Length: 485
Image (cartoon, rainbow, N blue to C red; front, side, top):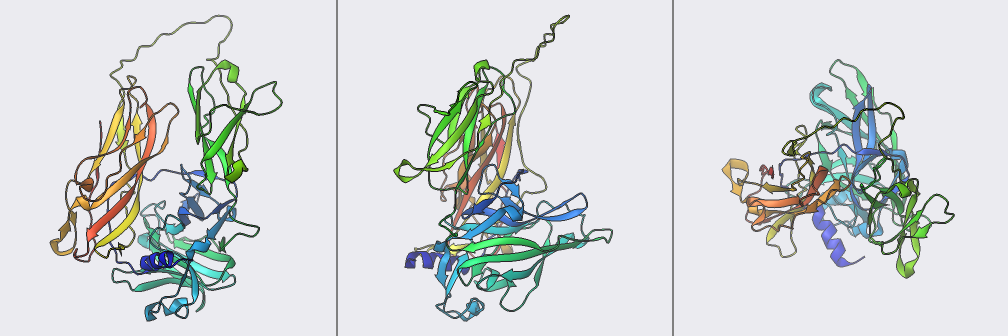
C-alpha cells in the first residue's frame, strides 16, 4: 500500500459536492444468470424494481457492455486489496475506528481501479408508491469486521447511512428516481454477508417488502487467488442471410487489463476447433455464407506467457436463405423511396439527470474536480440510403448555481464511447474534449460513415468537471443538448 494511493482514497472521503443535470438515456439491461465476481467499475449493487405486484432487489451490472441485471445470489462483490487505507486523525471519522487503524474503503467518488457500488430507484415509476419513496434497510452483517456506508456533504462532513458496529437494522428513505453512491468501509479482511431489505407502501395502501436479501462481499484476495475472469461471446444474432456481416465480441466478466485473444471455429464434419488466422482482437467480423451455417465459434483470452486465462462457451452461427415454398408462387416487388426513413437521437424522458460525485481538490490544490458518466444515448437510423450520421452535444448556457452564481460550461469535458451497435454498423466515438473549451462548444459524441449507419447504436461518455477553487460552494445545473445530422 503506497502513500499516494492512501492520499487519493482519503481525499475522496472528504470532498465537496457539485450537482450536474443533463440529457440522458437509461438503456434497459438484459438479464444474466451466470455467477460473477465484480471487482472494479460501476455497479448499482442495490437496484430496486417493481413488477407483477412484487418489489425486488437486483444488481445492475455496469461493468460489462451492454449492462445486465443480475440476481444478488449470483454476484460476489470484491473489495480489492488496493482499497486499503487508514482511519484519518479527524474526530468526524471516529465511527470508522481509531486513527491510523486499517480500513478498506470503496469511495463515494469513482476510483477506476476499484468497485463503485451504489443504490438505484430510477426503475421505479412515479405515483406508484406512497410519498414516491421506498425504505432501504441494512438488517444484518455477518463477517470478520464492521461495515459502514456513509456519504459526505459539500463541507466534508460525513453522513452515516448504515453502520453495523452500533446495532442494526439501519434504514433510509429513498425517493423514486434516485441514483446514489456512498463510501463502503470494511474494518477487516475476509468474507461478509450483508442483508439488505426494501419496504414500500403502494398508493392504495398495500404494504410490500423484498424480505432480507443476501449480498456477498470479499475484502482482500479471493480464496484460492484473485478474481477469476469469465469469458462469453456477444453480438451474435439469432440468424443471418448470406452476405450479412457477422460481428462477434469477446466479453470479460469481470473486466481485466488483458486484451490478447484468439478466435477458433469448427464447422459440421470437423472434430476439433481450429484457430482463425490473424484474429487476435476483442472482435471478429466476417461475411455470412451458406457454407458457414451451423459452424461453431469460441474465443480464448491469454495472459502472460501466452497462457490461456479463460475460454468462452461455443456459439453456433445460423445462415439461411429466404424460405421457398414449392408449387404455386407469386413474386411481389416493392419499391421504397431512398429518401424515406429517419434519423432519431432519443433520451428517456423519465431519466434525464446525471449527478456527478462530490467534487474534490486536485493534486495541485487549485481546482475542484469530479468525474462521472453520461447515461447511454440511443441513435436510430432507418434511412435506406444509409448516408451516415453525426451526433454532437453542447451545453449552450452556463451552469447556474445558488443566488445567480454561474460557471462556464467549458469547465465540463467528456470522453465519448460507443456502448453498443447493430451488426454491420460502423459507429465511431468522437474525440476527447478536455475541460477548458469543454462542452460550451458543439462537440462530436459519435459518427457513422456513409453506408454503415443504419440500425441502432448506444452511445455514452465519461464526464470530467474541473472548476477553479474560488468557485462559490453550491449546487449547479446545466442542460446538455444533443443534435443528430
